[in-house]
Image 1 (cartoon, helix red, strand yellow):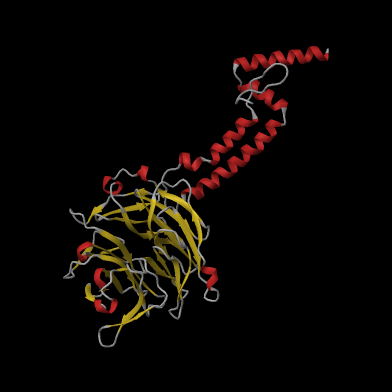
Image 2 (cartoon, rainbow, N blue to C red; image 1 turned 90 degrees about the vertical axis):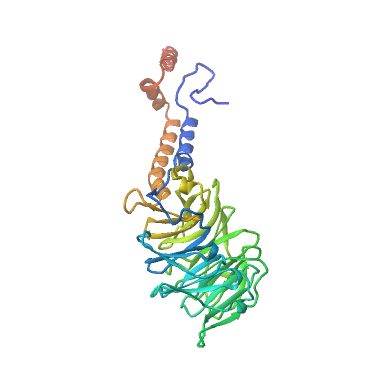
Length: 417
């Protein structure tokens, strides 16, 4: 067995830097992100929407990134300027139902906000109004836990805590046209989203897994059973993929191909060494998404790279209002900037340390891989060159190592003579 720092032969010992130690250094460099990683974004000064715990469940933003609405317990809804959320408008609804999800129409001027007891509200930006968009009875007075507008905005899909899925739209008589989709399950529809350009939508149920709604409103389960799904996002029209997350550190990509439904079988991966539960996912920029986790942290998932990177680590948060709360959503204000929303009603901005900074792990890879490659080459050269080992010992070795090397060279000269 070799001990680091010692090379042993049948004769004298010489203390030199062994090839094994070089390998250890390479391994430490490759393990760098887990040892040396810091957050890729910095937090700014936060805003509290109330002195009380609002019990928020999420946030929805329009396609242009101009307006954000937050929603939660006791029919609480508030609209705000997405770029400057200090500019706010309270939206009053005379009810006490908990609001559980929301989604903006692709046109950006209206949104559906859904909640307990079959409640579906329509928010209009023009006059900052809230009004009932469908009769609760048409949705069986079920708790509506998810909503998503389809690609063209002609229909909205809603899912219930009992696993039912409906499509609905405004009717000419001022009510709503509602149709049930066949093939639903019996567990809560945890999340749903529709692709921006492909006429397909993805839903996630607590037990049945991942399902696809096609252009003709046909619904089909495609896989992903056995995972506790918590969120879905289809971030970009330039990519034909959507991303789903489950709370046990699982990320799945779902390919959307209108001509081949079998392509939509989820590709599931679990992220190693992540000590957090995934609670949701939102679009960030292009085909990049942000995974919200608890304890409070953010992870970026890049569809084009099919890779996930740390963005905000819990250990780097010194804001007690954030670290002691649960993240319920994020929205983007730029490539590497945006806002975080917590359950109690705390908003905090995040930005990259430098404008246009790339993902932390991308930068690390760009720097570390050449360095590690260089060390590997150097270790191979070192291992095959006794002269280089002797030169290293003479220059930077310990006094004892230098004495042992000198003694070994004297013996070698005596043999030659």
